[in-house]
Image (cartoon, rainbow over all chains, first blue to last red; front, side, top):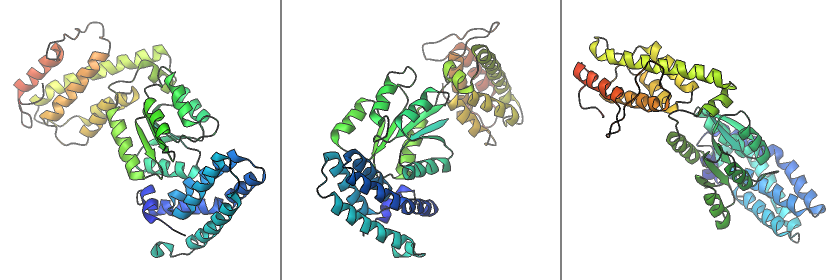
Length: 114
Length: 265
């Protein structure tokens, strides 16, 4: 798991309170977004895969979740190319990253650890 | 003055919205291109659009293309904030007159700098009649009534300014100036509004302030219809007009502390 705090602080112009609020929003919506990704795979819906992955890429990029955002970008590309071959594996990797992120940001002193 | 944010990702929208709100800008949010189009074409007073490209219903580039077919939306400044960074998309946005293309992730301070620069450059001398009628939901007669009152107010302010150098107390009468600033804001005379608003916070005006205010009033008088019974503005080769030139002469001749004869014009 890679967290790029420069991205995150740049995004909010150094406003830590806003960043915390945004992190809470992202973490809360992660399970729903993962379900959407898996649904798109099951239904072979490339457009939906692309859109959901694009959405996650943006949200994760804002909070500095660099590696997770890159995985989402790869999924977006696969959706755009209508390729489903490696999608399942990538979604698993993304889920693993997101679980780590959730755990990390649930620690009360996460700011000191970055 | 509103900034329209077109963004389907609520996290990105929230960051842009809160950053702009913190710096005193009012915003309107739209989640897709069609919603944005509705905002733009209905009664909202939008001065700048900040939009993503990858949007549901109507994508960002199609929205901007559609704006180009509209008489009073084609010149609206647009900032694109998108994760799309391929040359073809960026070139297409540039062809459509996008004023700034920002690749995500967002950097709030950079976006804010761009917004300040763009809105600073686009401050109106006076908004169009149509724009004001739409913004305030008033008819032509009501607008005429307002603009006539504004002309009177501008002229009264000029009269007041003429007398100021002769007086012991050279501070601007704040209540009168505040009234001018309010009317200027209402009629979309943004530059005058901004400047007068700043003047009201100064204890004493200097020659620069004085002539800048006259310059703005001159610019307005060029645009405003002349009231019956008032002499029309006579233009000169150096860009000044008789009314304003006489006024300047009078101010310079009057002298007074805090003013000198080396001002603009």
